[in-house]
Image 1: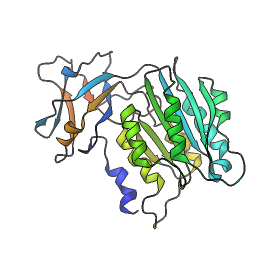
Image 2 (image 1 turned 180 degrees about the vertical axis):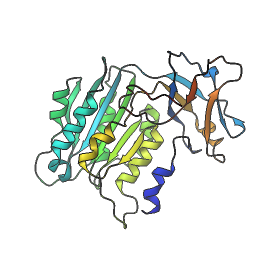
Image 3 (image 1 turned 180 degrees about the horizontal axis):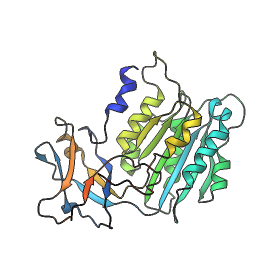
Length: 289
């Protein structure tokens, strides 16, 4: 495994760089509902308190765009992809809505906003024929379409199985738009890795996911796609905001800590953040031991 392949795994959930402002999902494990305020939590890096952190509630209904790359591999494994998506959508809650985008020579809207599982599943199909996959352009299209969502909680899921050689938009431009819109991106990568790859599109998307507050996974086969999607949580209970200046305070310590403000009564409730929960769509969050 080369250094760039290892990098995403070295970016642990409690790691933040000092370059970008971002929202980070905050997971709270509790036996009772909590109504946290920014003053309830203390954010620090080492011994230094980060005073500018903000907190907003997550949870609730969510609008999710699902971008599927129209590659030959996806065409040959449509059945696996549809089964994995069906499993993922089984965890949806009342009020959730989804749409799909097939990324081909140009982005194509597969299914508009709906909660109808069969319509969403059947919409991810790749017609035969050789084509370029403008994947980053497809994500941009999905981001624009997400602007019409009815829910304020929003996220994008990207499933890719090939390189992107022709998109008009560049990764840095797309990253800036995602950060500005506070949209987390969750990437499931089925691309084969080769020793001579320097900066494949999968690596760029992994960076995009991390910078946006989402997450990414490498999957070795379409048969395991369902397991990967089950780990995608798009419904954090809270979101923690770090400005660029706040993030810079963590540049040397590298490790961000979130705990209770001294004097706040919390009844033994544990508090921490991570970029995803198990069980998909935020269902039945695990308890911290």
